[in-house]
Structure formats: structure tokens, C-alpha cells
Image (cartoon, rainbow, N blue to C red; front, side, top):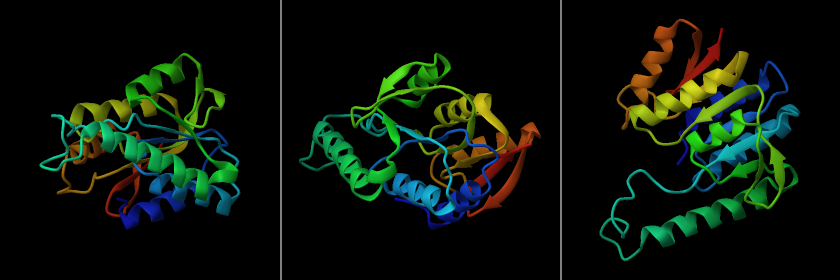
Length: 202
């Protein structure tokens, strides 16, 4: 699940990163977007560290079973998490990101505290500091998506980028409202709509 236009936005952001500060991805699912970002880092010679965060517990996960299927949410979560780990190890193994198994709120709390975290590959890494680019693709409800932006904004350097997934007008979820809120701050320029919004911090 990756909007093709997001790849164009990734490419623009990574080709024009203002600093060598980390790239953040909020929400990783099975690793497609993670691998694309890793590939583009390599293509453009970007030395920035890459962090992702996900607990693989989905906002529509109420009830024990996945829809009307015989698949439990527990087994679905395990499948998606294991698929992410395999995919990223296979396609980004020489420069795999530090994926931290936390909700985004928890991740930013750890980031603010400069904690040492252990990623899903068993590597210890210190969190914290400025951010050059963030791809926001976590919980798409308004409160969560707005907090993800607010937390990102706190650390994003001037000239840094934010790509807000499912923010195009008419998208399912409430990210389009968050996009309008970002525009209304007057502190971000719309770099592109592909159709999702790519913002640059002024």
C-alpha cells in the first residue's frame, strides 16, 4: 500500500535534504515505503540515519478476529511484523533503518529523552536530535495525525520536509484536515501534491 506519487515526494525530499540529520518514518506496515526510502538514500548518497517506528497494532483492530475471517488480529500482527523484518533485511540489508517497536507518541517521548533503544534487529541506537525529513503514515485519525505533525515540527530543521500520507482532498481518514492546519500555520510551504501533501519548513 503505497501511493505512487509518494515515491516522487520521497525522491524530491531526499535529493534536497537540508542537513545530514535523521529521516523518520511513522508507520511501516510491511516495509514497502521503508525500502523505497532506503533505496533513495543510497541513490542520492544521503548519509542520514533512518529511523522508523511501528507497533503493528492497527486502529481498526477492535475485536479478536480480522473482519469476518478466521484470522486473529494477534496472528495478523505477527505476520505483518515478520514480513516487514524479512522485507527490509532482504532489500535494505546493507543500510537497514533502525526500526523501533513503539507507537509514535512513545517514539517521540523516547526521542525527546535521548534514550537508547533496541531496534527490531537487536541493535542499540541512541535517539534524539534534529530531523531533516519525516514521512507521517501512522494512525490517520485527526488527533493522532496532528500529534505526529506537532511532534515532528518540534525537531524538524528549517528547510526540512514532511510528507503526510492520505492527505489529498477526499482521502479516507482525517489527514486532509491536518494538511489544512499545516498550511494555516504559515510556517510551511507546499512543495508538491502528488496527490498527498509534501511540505517544506520555512
